[in-house]
Each structure stands twice: as structure tokens, then as C-alpha cells.
Length: 344
Ligand code: MG
Image (cartoon, rainbow, N blue to C red; front, side, top):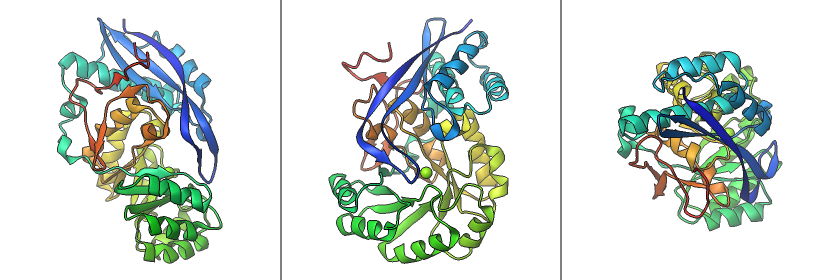
């Protein structure tokens, strides 16, 4: 029988992180460990209050799954559908177990996850780094501080959105992505996106409320900047109804429940001609690296959650010139950061 254990970890953020919806300077994530014949796989849950989750709801799921994992670590489909059936709303907890199982499988066959998936590590896209909402001066300072990062993702949803983008453009040559986190009305979105054109915005994430599909369809016909949906989509089943509403979707392990569902989402999105972004919550290098193994399959990556925390307890994926460098170690390929005492 495989054994499951877990630990709640507190993560302090480098800067208070603000979006149109929330503000926080710390997070509680849950690290999940699954053991099989002396091999240990690791996974991480970054619960989201937006989806009614916290560390307690995660550990409840993990307690319940502890005796149900069986003895076959390759039974990925059975384990993930069992979890999805019992805990539909607990995607972050499911993602942690799914990640740990993939990590074990990689360690058993002694191959990095991207190899098992048949992917080319040279095809990872450049990742953006997020600038949270703040005063215009602080956001500008943050963009300056990030120096030659090739892509910035700017959180918006204020009265001064266009001024913010203008101010960032003054100090940065980076490609600018903006994320309104559902804060705009359709008319407001059209005005703002049109006004931002001169600052060369690469894409706009979730301009309108998650369920305002009519507004999104109206907006998409009137703008030429790609619109990527995040809050509007959680799993593969959500994608078909979004045809005509946007150009692409943002997939996150913590929204969809793990690598397995993320792969299904990529297939469905491609079949419907959507572009694909791979995003994240505030996560350590453990969950970020797990997601990064899928990144050769996507158009955009926004995998910077680990860069927002003060002391990352793990190390795994690297970044060179903005491009993700996948680790060569078997499985997800992360190790505990030296001196952190985590992950053992
Ligand atoms: Mg977003």
C-alpha cells in the first residue's frame, strides 16, 4: 500500500500581492508526500479562497485519500478520477496527489517527467513575471527592479489602468501582458484595451466577469489584442462553451486538479483552436516545476509563483533569459533548497 503524509507550510511573500480581488502577504500551502517501496513522490496544493479552499480543506481531502491510493503508482487515471468524483471542488488538493504520483512514476522509471510525456525541453516558452496592483509609482519601481525580464504581467482593475500601463511602458521594454481579474465591464474593457494599444500590450487576461460570455463575445469582435480566459475556465469541460468568447485559455494545475487534467485541457483547447497559457497560483518551485514540464506544449507561460515568495523551500525549474529550464532529475525533479529543512 502506498503511504501518504503531508505538511502545511507557511510562505511569506516578498511584496504584498494585490489583484482586483484580494490582497495578501502570506500563504499556507500543503506539501503532500506519497511513498511506494522506498520511493517518495512530492506534490503541492496552493489552496485558493476564491474557490472556497484553505489548508484545512486540503488536509481533509488528503486524510481521506490516505488509505485509498492502492499499491499501483502507475494507476494515475484511476486515482485521479476517484479523487475528482469524491472531491470536485478541491482541485488544489487533487493536484498535490496527482503531482506526487507523477513524481513517483518518474523516479521509478528514472526519467524526468517531460521525457515520459514525450516533450522537448528546448521548446519551453519564456515566462512572464507578475507585477501586483499598487500605486503607479510602486508598480513602475517594481518593473524597473525586474530589469531585463522579457515579459511582465501587470495586474489591473482600477480607475487608472491605462496610466499604469503607460507608466510601466516608460521604464520597461518587456512584452506587457495585462490581467484585469474580471474587473471590467465590456464597454470599459473596449475603451481601456483600445487606449492601451499604443503601449503594445501582448494580451489581455480575463477582462470581464467569469460568466459574462455574451460580453466576451461582443468584446472579442471589437479588439485585436488576444484575450485569454482564466477565471472562466477550470477544467476541460468548461472549454467548448467558450468558443467565440476569447482567443485562449489559462490552465493552472490548482484549478484543474493536476497534470492529467491539464493535459486533457491542452488537447481540448487545441481541438477548438484556442491558444494555451500555463499559469499558477502562489506556489513553491515544487508545483511550478511540475507545471513547467507541460510547458513545451503551450504558447504562453506565466509560471512565476515561486519568484513571489521570500524563501522557496524547493529548487527545480530554472529561468535563463526568461525561458524555463527543466531539471534533468527523475520525476518532477525538485530537491529541498539547502538549509531549508523541507522535503525530507
Ligand atoms: Mg489571471
